[in-house]
Image (cartoon, rainbow, N blue to C red):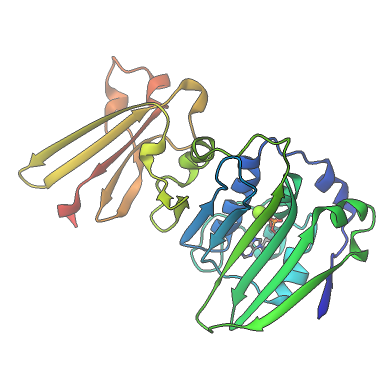
Length: 282
Ligand SMILES: Nc1ncnc2c1ncn2[C@@H]1O[C@H](COP(=O)(O)OP(=O)(O)O)[C@@H](O)[C@H]1O
Ligand SMILES: [Mg+2]
């Protein structure tokens, strides 16, 4: 068995000083990491209420080989954008990672984190106990974490994070809260689907009153529209209406001319999320 050690960084204090307000927030960090790894699908399994089951976050992203785990994953407070730029390598997504500590968010709510990752024909497994991390707070490079490697299918890629022994004092992770935390950012990405207990996150998970309409247009066939106006407190970053043709979103969200309407205040428009499906335009 080989051992991996943490590479030290003087900004280590940020790690243990960082407080994650909820389990859902810790899970969001793992979803952000799946996005940054160019995954197309991330599947989250939440434990059944009152059970001792772990949380599992599984992605089909690039995965990591041993060297990447040691030099990139186990580096504390490393800003990947500084060395690799702010776009992901294959899908050219804007990188979400900032502080190089997101992967540890899970250890703020669980005792043991297991990383199982597959890339280029090798599966690598690493277990990080919270206790080790805490006791070595001043001296992270001293911890030796067991790393196991075994061959896997060369075409396999992706990472599965398991968080076990969840802290009892944390509020039990809720599907609803998690959806609300993820939906504005990920609810309408074409090439990134988020599943929570096998249910795919969609625009319809946006909290608020939903209105649906289906019409048949002469030159565009059946067109389905879904609109939600969210609570003022919950609005996300990119409001507006998108047009989806055969699963793909065309262009950026817009207000479809509603911004010209004098009876709709801008404050309401900024809370409008909608999607128009027009498959026959494809
Ligand atoms: N699910 C994953 N798949 C592939 N690589 C990952 C994954 N999660 C983390 N990594 C690697 O570990 C690094 C550190 O992750 P993290 O602590 O969240 O910091 P940040 O996202 O700010 O870079 C990432 O930049 C990435 O290189
Ligand atoms: Mg991250």
